[in-house]
Image (cartoon, rainbow over all chains, first blue to last red; front, top):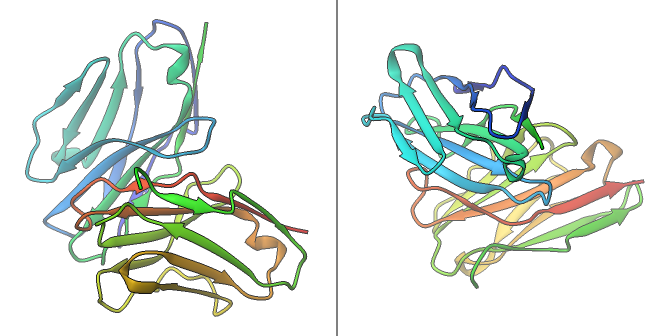
Length: 115
Length: 114
C-alpha cells in the first residue's frame, strides 16, 4: 500500500523567511514518482514538480528547491525568501507501478506567509 | 481546450437527489482521474480512466457513485441518492500518458448536499 505523510498541517512564517515542507512516503514499488502540488485559495491544484525514483538529484527552480532522499523516503520542499503569494496548501503525492494508476496524496500543509 | 474544464463549478442539491458532474479533459490526454476533497482534507482517489481500458473504480466509496467516459474524452461522475457526507469538491485531472507525468487538474465542482 502507498502512503504519503505530511506531518506539518500548518506553518506560518514572515515574508522573506525560508521554509521547508516535509514529505515522507511509503511504497513497495521499485519504480515510483513523487509530485508536489500547490493549491492556492482559488482552489485549483497547480503542478510544481515530478520526480522519478531513479533520479535523486536535488532540483532548484527559482526560489523553490526539492530534496529527494531515498534512504529516508523523503521528498522535502523548500521555499527560499518566502513571499505572501506563496500562501497556499501544498500537497505531496506519490504514484507507482504496482498501485494501479492512483496518485496518493498527503494530507497537505497549509503555508501562511505574513507580510 | 487549454485546460481541464469542469461543470458546474458549484452545485447545491437536496439530500436524496441524483447529481451529474462533468469533466472535459485536455484534448489528446488519454488518462482521466476523479478525486474528491472534503473540507480541509486531502485528496481522495475515486476513479481512473486510461484510453479504452476498463476503468479503475477501486476508489469509489459506494455503489451510489459511478462514472463514465464517452469517446475517450468527456467524463461524467454520477452520484445517486446524495447524502450530506457527499458534500465536497470533486476534482478532475487528465494527463497524457498516466502516472509518470504531472496531472493537470480542473478547478473542481463544489457539491453541497442540504
